[in-house]
Length: 139
Picture 1 (cartoon, rainbow, N blue to C red):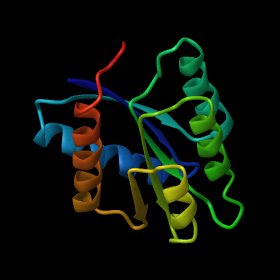
Picture 2 (tube, rainbow, N blue to C red):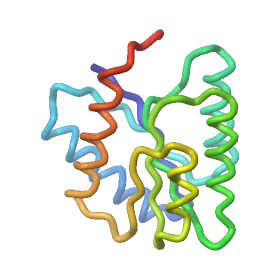
Picture 3 (cartoon, rainbow, N blue to C red):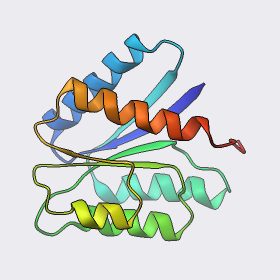
Picture 4 (cartoon, one colour):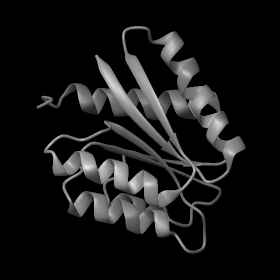
């Protein structure tokens, strides 16, 4: 199955680390084709995801969203995405556990605290793909 993944992190080095770990996961799980898109700004990230929702299909299956405390504007974007109909997987990444309860409220599949290692990415991806495999894709 092909899965489209969007990774948002405003820190380029952290974004690259996350992407590299997802790519390592993909190499170890060749049965899944993973297509990764990168975003360093929240507004374009949210717009791209929302545009897909307007067409009754989502541009992505899995979202990795970095949360920058204390503001948490990224959490508000996740709430908006859910309200607009995004039903697939959200995985939050943050330097603190500060927004973990709010992540639960937007039905995040996973909440990773930095520094994130390969094992944590593997576990999050396994849980995401397991959940997605039980959903019938309409697109």
